[in-house]
Amino acid sequence: MFAHIVVIAALARDVPFKPPIIPTPVDPGQQASPYESRLATPDLKGSEGSFDLEGLSYVKTRFTIGADLSGLNNVTSDNSDAFLQHVAADPRWRLVAWDGAIVAFKRTTQGEIWTVPFRGYHEAKNTAWRAALRFSPWKPGAPWHNSPLVSQASSMDKKIKISVFTLEQRPDLQAVAMSWQGPVVTYELYEAAREVELTQTVNELSKLPGFMTLATLPGIEKTGYSKPGMPKNGVKEGEPTVGIAAAANGQLDLHAWIHVPGRGVTWARILDTELAPWEEAAVATGTREIVGWGPKEDSLFFMQGRFPVPAGKHMSATVEIWHQPDGGEPARIGAFPVTIPDR
Image (tube, rainbow, N blue to C red; front, side):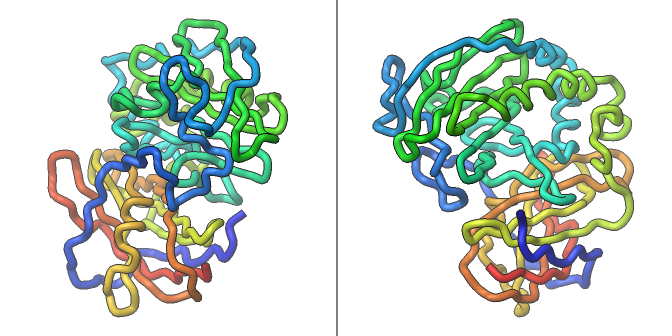
């Protein structure tokens, strides 16, 4: 759970303009990320016919599970833009450009805050899992595209054959990875635990059909989201706010309720008391997100990102929110006073 939840601040004093670092789409590659441990999150690297994953893991057994993911067929070329807009607005998902694809990672709640780590993996002592909706193909060579450890199925398949593999770094954990492909959107799941009970996998699979039904209802263009498909307090009205919390392993978690003028990329920049950018590249990369948008100017949509920072005591700072619309130039849309917590 987060420590030192600090400052939910309204729009603050103006600060001098300084051109920001514009974060590029994340391409994590095969190297360990500084943002998150790889204790139970393999990169699934491997070639066809090899289950060695370069010593990372090995296959233990295979079995079949049943699942109905036909709701993925609700998304077609005719409504894919509207569905993406709803996912961007829904705080349960974090929509990002990642490793050559547009992907939404599933968030969870900690207290009243939705959150997901940088790489999308939720980790606890003896478990790890990730759920994702993918809107575009992985680039050639991406682990989820090539690895034989990722079990593949069509959205029309009622069963999927799963390979269970053991992580070399944690031989006490068993893992599964699976992918269901619809006409436009693909759903992906990963879970590692001591026993192959697939608790989180079953939980996420049970939620998806209802979500797909409600999130693809007509009328999204009127509000920016499907009202029946939005969780309670999933959209707010009023003044934008920003908060920062200390997360695990020397990271900060930034969350905000903001309004952006349209589809594009949004990110944060932190200025110190001298108004100089602080850890600018890490903050920009960790907070880069496609945030929800809608026609009502007082509608606020959720934004959240996690990034590593040096150890230190709490300090006063200013958070700038920047937005670059598709095909346009970046602009600052807000500045907020915050206190950076101990880390």
